[in-house]
Image (cartoon, rainbow, N blue to C red):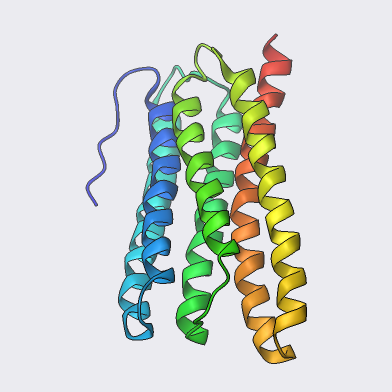
Amino acid sequence: MKLQLFPQENAGLELLSRMASQLLRGTGVLAEILGADPEEFDRLTEQLHQIDAETTDLHFALMTQMRTSFINPLPREDLYELSLLLMSAMECLDASAETISLYKLTGVSRRASEQLEVIGRQAELTASAMRRLASLEDLEEYWIEMLRLARRAERSRRIWVAELMREHKPMAYARHRDLADQLSGTTAQLRRTATFVGGILVRES
């Protein structure tokens, strides 16, 4: 993946936005995995591994940009923390795919698709919000909507876990629970991203 560093002042925010967009790409691949035959799991999981690697490249590109730029739209530590949160969200999403591939999970609950729907919407909102951090415009709405989505995802996860306990024996339960936890980790990291943005809004108001 060839990375281009943006010369303008808001280059760091553009890189953060691209990291969030990677999550949207990853969500699409994971949705494919959920609908694929087991023999396709490894191939599709490798695609998600590549997206994860590209996200890490964007993180390091941001580190380079911060070191070489005299002017940044936010304090360097804020840019760094946001980048770490987005990278962690991608790692959880990637682990979800690997869990399906390693265990050759089939018959995955529709709750997984509900989680992916939330993650996709969170990623879209976050990609847009990262570009607006320089002006801090309309970010309160982003913050509120992200919290609403996170609560929706958490309710769905609780129902999913309860269903797993009723419907699966211990070994199968553990495997499907691992997937549920990884997807929940993705939504949680994106919620933390929004909460961090909320902190910036409070500090700068």
